[in-house]
Picture 1 (cartoon, rainbow, N blue to C red):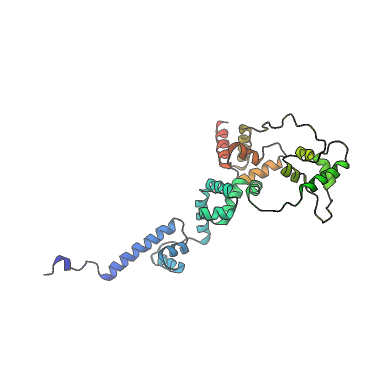
Picture 2: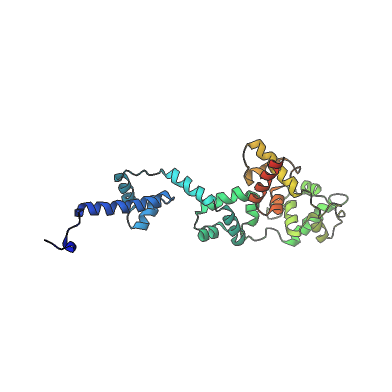
Length: 272
């Protein structure tokens, strides 16, 4: 009689191989269910994408469509929205966020549009650009516009003067917003040009919209839509109000992030 150590396993070699293979396929499918694509599973286990699909099919395991996989990955990435915004504010570029967080650039861009809105995204994004107008040119344009009107030069007077006018090399005259960005304010631009400016407004530096008013503005839009609005949707809504509602930039200034503003708005609505 053979010693116990010499006894054969009860399972034949083919059965043992099949059992090991099934366990292997289960490990692969578990990774797939967590959101990995067939290609990513194949890279992890050293086989091709099509071989992964074949093994799943032979084992009777379901696979997702490309669209379903993309939706699953996007949902997982959306959970990192605040992290995406934080890294974007620090690095200023979508490429840097994508590389640091290992999230596709298209997904990063979509998250930033939803969280920040287009205007704030553009303000933060770093784009090395040569100034289109030198400071001396801006001052000269203001001087010309001022000579064409009586009294302090207002933005409306300047817009009327700049409309349809061009520089000698064909550039349109800068908008009033160019002056605000370059000199900090319209009044600052006039003073830089040595022109008379109206005295500062009595409400200058005071908060026009407090946190409660900002939260109420979001809550009203939320009731209209029947769901929480995205930052981009609120930005359009505020723009259409022509100044009667706080801007998206004001809301982010009050609450730091759009998600914080949404949470506050939902609490405010609950108390109402």
